[in-house]
Amino acid sequence: MTSRALRIWTTQSFAALGVFALLAQSYQAVWDRSPFPGHAGLVALVMIAGSISFGLLRACPESTVARSFAHPRCRVEIVPGDLFEQKDSHLVIGFTDVFDTDPGDSRIVDEGSVQAQFLRREYDGDLNRLDADLRTALSGEPTLSTVLRAEKAHGKLKRYPLGTVAVLGMPRRRFFCVAYSTMSGGLVARSSVDVLWHSLSRLWDAVEEHGGRQPLAMPVTGAARARVDALDQQSILRLILLSFVAASRERLRTSQLRIVLRPEDLARINRLELRAFLDSL
Image 1 (tube, one colour):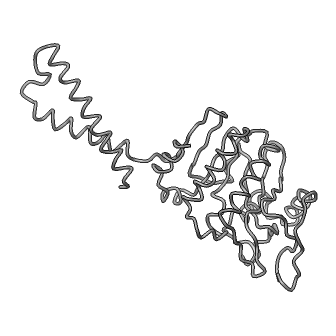
Image 2 (image 1 turned 180 degrees about the vertical axis):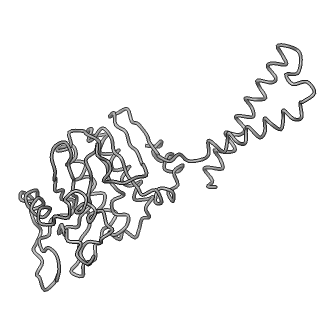
Image 3 (image 1 turned 45 degrees about the horizontal axis):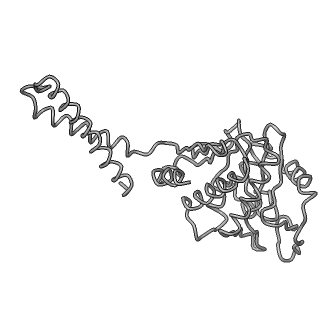
């Protein structure tokens, strides 16, 4: 049990015990007799057990973490589930600065990544169609440079500025493909806290422009393959929440941000601390 959970357990247990004691004393004061004559010891044990159980119940984290904000009016949720089953939401898909797409033998795009799932589940594995849509979406975006094939043996060569967002799909369901990491010539993706913050800021701008304030679902972008070694998954999650709330204080970007984690990943997150962090925002 974490220190916060222990504090909640003890506080709520003593509060419940106090309520029970107050009710019993009030009854005795009004009616001038014990509410449970001859069973005071048993009743006291039941009150203590009930108070402890109530405290434990309040200290157990919920399966989801959610918070609604009034100014502007929006909602944040951290939920277990499958990102691509969020059919009522636009989706965020993380990419590198070259927008590589080919999972192939996992040298360029890992088969287990969100990018690879995006290709399979939203494009039926049609790599040519995905690349064509990306080219169209990126046609008006500036490029930084073109990598020589001798420097990068596989994948795409045209580099875009970090934070570039390619918006795919139709208005009812958009896919915000954001470049948040740099792909090296050796096919290693790397990012940093500063790059993540900048990329998230660009993402919220694109969501405001193209999202129509509809719900937005996203993974914990940068938590696995971008090699942001300075932060663990929970810290990156906090960074995303802080970035979103800060951007939303300027203008409403979406009515709902839903961060979707695999159930086993959410189970490892300290949800009580995360709820306290949301409350502090």
